[in-house]
Image (cartoon, rainbow, N blue to C red; front, side):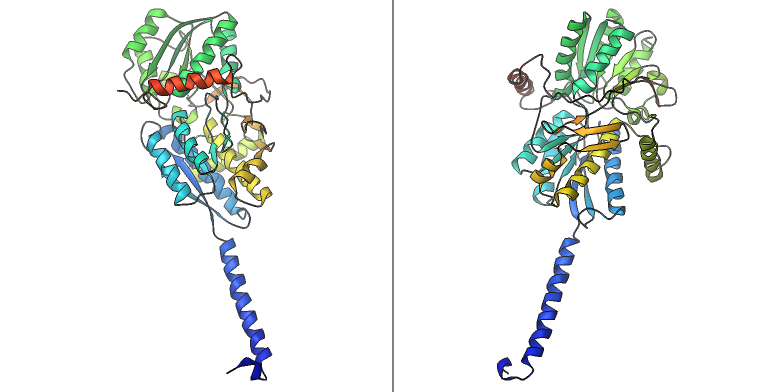
Length: 421
């Protein structure tokens, strides 16, 4: 039958067009409602699980909040959670899979700088986006990373100033043997020298090691005024236990830690660590409406026995900053979203934070807390000043810092941590 010879051809054509456009419209609607996938790349096992798994939980909580409010761009966010097993190489492999196979719009990722360094190569190769939530050594700027943790001038340098005035002038430095502690040690040395203090010892442990006997013997022998601690992961359990067994109390030689927060305290003997100090941008005890609401929601979702902590808060706000940028940009394109995040300000649980448009790090507050017997911190110093990020300390040029990092990488046979061989 030829339509042009049929008196009802116009009617039939109209019906056909209505049906066709309806199917097309329905198909577009279905596409628009497809979820936006994101990667959540955190250790759920291994030496770093205690620190990383709560950050993953906070990331998932933020995603759930956004989804409960209608999602972004009319679409839900679908998290793809990966256990990196405290292994940087495996984390990089999974980042590649998330981008290429899962086609995630962004990755909320990792704890150690050794992990970030290898994942950085992946997201830059694929022009993807990484939101990194942990305090670190700085010495890095990437167009494909937004850094929601602090740089040394927002955590470590102010804490050294405070410790010099309040605790003592002779410092013993301990850390895990990877890029963050090694770089931070150089920054601390320069700062202590300018203050007129003295570095009386410097020791490193293989990441995850509990072999602390020689380290403790040196501390007992030297008797420093203060220990500055960049040990990461569950090595801290062995370190503080051995200090107490050697008869060194917090009153005798206080320790200021830069990677122990409320979440880590839950897995330590509090009698071993109480009375010591930590420097962070956020503590759970901050008394503000925004933080009380944050803590309440975290407890509702995960139980009243759980705690919040600095990297947990940084992971949480990173999701909200990203989602807000996606909504404003009207796209999940990594380059456009990153540009939209620049200069964004958020009322966070720690206080106001601001994304620096030049280096994509946050302006943040700094605080020092004393460990209490209840596993919480008493804030003993809170200047209330929003500190701009300075990823590259001016003590050396940028090229000097990059040479220093390259020397570490070569010393560790093409790794960003001591492979222990």
